[in-house]
Length: 187
Image (cartoon, rainbow, N blue to C red; front, side, top):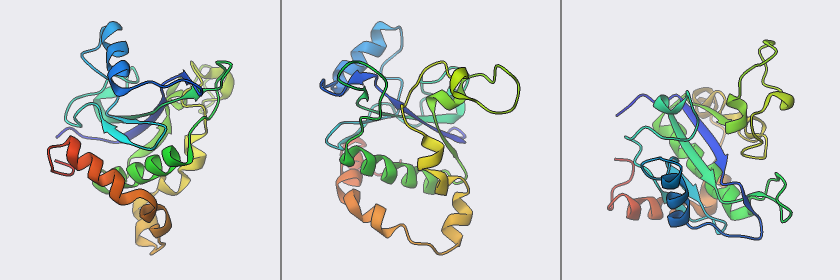
């Protein structure tokens, strides 16, 4: 297994009033010259999680960071007029939270960020500011939303409970991953 130290959240950059199936996403990426979907996971609007690339395979989702990262993409990211917007449904939010938590358990200490947070620091001040973003993806502040995962080991050791988040859709998410992985969770 490769060394993982980064979880990167993306959006599919599709309008909120449109759908993009995992098969269509795969075709889009193949047309761009990739050998399949570049993300490891894809979350549909209904919260269904699809394993779109084995974790053992290096992703094709953020240039310069693929070797040691896992890419997660949610369906959406543009409003009905095609402007960047956080279009995640409650089901997508729940699935994403649960997935990030499970990945943190498997790869403790991973940084969780959005695609835009890996843009170059053009002014050299040590911060990636909105005017430096190459793109808006994933159209929400990942660091703010997942701040409790910043120091995951400390969080887990503190005894705080994540039961509310984990119980929301845990069975549905883990069952779908098991089905995608041939019945084995986290090979």
